Length: 298
Ligand code: NAD
Image 1 (cartoon, protein in one colour):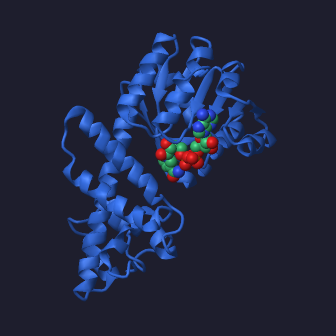
Image 2 (cartoon, helix red, strand yellow):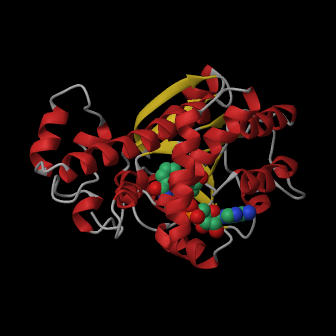
Image 3 (tube, rainbow, N blue to C red):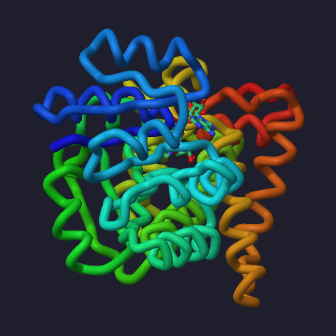
């Protein structure tokens, strides 16, 4: 299939490469000429704007952009995708944005005669490179079935979450819980160790008891508990604190829009805001455990 791909950053570039590997033809664009050149070298056709992607033969266009403002600019802006694209071309936005913005863009796309899916991902850059992402997809069931084989070239788990925006709802709810549970795991581990317990023994008890969660058994924030997690390598790599802060902000904003309280989510957002303001934005989000130690090092 001929596919358009807009946004070749940390996630988009490896996703686009996997589509090439799966045998698709690609027309790509990004604000970064270097990012476009790298994909062109791998076999994609270079485009200099979203409009140029729209004017290619692409039957389906994927976008992977930083935030809602970029998504709205690319789809709704002057000379943007919706103004230029042929009716019937399937549009898939995989960026993580708030559900209401996703619904707004999908409704505008429908008005232009283009079906649209929101399909945010989890799995990080490693999952993007390995083609093992989880896609949480919102939109019509028929459009979902049309997109599924394409998404399968980039991911392993492809879940239809309901109508437009519900992919973003699933993503926001999951990452809200992840942010809160990571802080919970950090707090409990720090307390146990401060009271004299060995971190590995404590984690073993928690992980076979009712406190067990992904943040404690798969991604424990206390150094020395698990190998091959960011805590074992100075919190380098993984999922950056500023991205977790962005996702908690999306949860707060979405909650405000429907008048739903997110009490622990707001607290988690403030803790990540504090940590990021201290200059730790590039560390993995499990580094939040450093807030529990006076010299910021557990
Ligand atoms: P990134 O900043 O590395 O890449 C975004 C790309 O979009 C950049 O290359 C940028 O130049 C391009 N871009 C911005 N505006 C554009 C425009 N108008 N036209 C063309 N290109 C434009 O971001 P990323 O890490 O690839 O993340 C993309 C999305 O995926 C974000 O919404 C993020 O929250 C989400 N996400 C990221 C991760 C992760 O681990 N990085 C994991 C899951 C989800």
